Image (cartoon, one colour):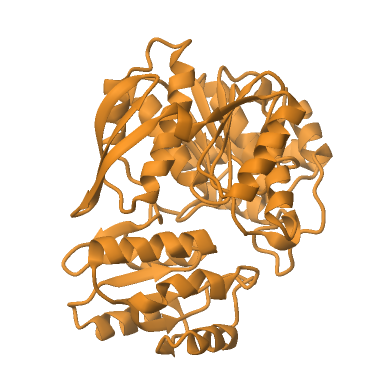
Length: 432
């Protein structure tokens, strides 16, 4: 099968990420049946780390994978959504699978999908399990797509479950309260197995602890397991000291934002647990693995002097984190290119940025779920942020660059879709 045919088949499936209306219900019957037909590849994996949450789960996955690879492990990583290419969703040893391997995977599953139809996301998850089993990875790091309890990835049996910060996102699907969202995320917990919980707001923390006891899981609180101190931000890095089960070390992450320290604390707590049974997981190797990490579309620096930063920034916690990055690293107002999906809490996301935006260029991401420009104009006007509009990302970037005068920082934010489009226009996409 040609790669173009493989992409065509995948795109022919129902893709809830791109439907104009949110998904009404979830069930695991279809993906469970498909995996049965495929020989249960998810049951052939050695070690699985399942990561859920609202904020930081992608960064935690990237850090876990890089650290384990630094320890000499063979790694698999499943992510969603992708930024530049669907092949990003299935990675071996830190690299997206090749077009050839991806095509072979789709070809293998075509007949199975005709027997048991599944969605775009479900097929990607099944192909990831298949790839990891064939590659005999030592560790599979699996990012939960939406929620947890009824997500396709939850059919895997994790050695360790991880829940990063929970906030308001996907309210129409997961529920209108932090408590309801937390209960859905808690669905990835397992009886007798550890669950590492990152820093949480009080309500989410209480709900998660209740679910831990209810499900008989073993609670590991990252903040109690790993101590961090002496956080310093400078240039394009964040540096800090940490002490946990693996020992003490000074870390230097080539990432923007103090929020990445909390993500790394969670990662170190997970690695401390795994290190009890795996002598290959050592602190020096972990630190080395994290030293050159790159996380696409998470306050990603694509140019310096002047800065161009691309960030997904699609919920209120992300908005606050981006505002903190601008305040601490850039220390001046920026020109913002912004576009969002209409299901998001746009006003709450943009509000923390208002003080730091000199002018915004508003644009619709290439998605049927994109927020209308009229709504964006209303929100930005109410927040007192000067704005202008563009028809597409190419035009938006050109307008923004003209506004910066090649002196002021330029920030792209609001959606993974917009981030991917921007990276492609800037010549930094990883390929189709």
